[in-house]
Length: 293
Image (cartoon, rainbow, N blue to C red; front, side, top):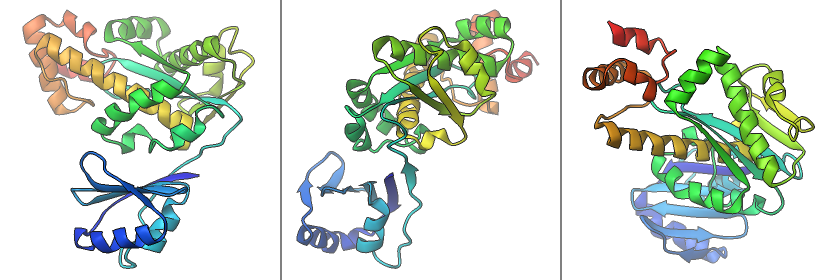
């Protein structure tokens, strides 16, 4: 397991922690927004100027127990599985629950060539990371991984939803495309995704290259490093697309489907027409009916 633990650290104890780490063979270097970053063969410890302490590596929890003040409880660590198969594709999506913006499905292959590098990036499920960090590490994931990003913009999404008639079927189509795109670049026999419906949905959507793949869907699949990496790529692309939409239409489009989103949708309709919503929103959401009122 690769773990990532984050907690608030008492900066008055910074010097004593640094001395202990130095005595135990940690190497120190500077990094942006940090007091320091320390590494050994097992963990990377980053102390930010804000007082946030981030511990990453296979022995993150052991580090917390050994080096941190006993009054500080070992933080809840997000365990990331790093060895599912010799090679495997992880897929995940972003934008599924957002009224505005596209649906983005991404796939990332983990194998012997990139696994060590992936595990050193501090990868977690994108829902546990802020967008700034995601924007920073997404290019690194792309650089070292065979990957695919399938973006279904709102107009296309609405067209496909009318045709397919079911969100799970649409998701399956997107996950299958991401897998197929990767298989065109590099062979692989295994794939993993979060469970959102019957496993047969993705299998049935796979084409020639994907029909022979060993596909698994399971709950909390984002604990897997390939799925977590895919979630980061999907989220990064979703945020980029939303930003472009905001710039194009001069409206701040919020995420989710809140009351604020309804206000923004009404603002859009007043400015561009109700029919124009098909270009920015997922019309099958109940939000659309509220916008009509």
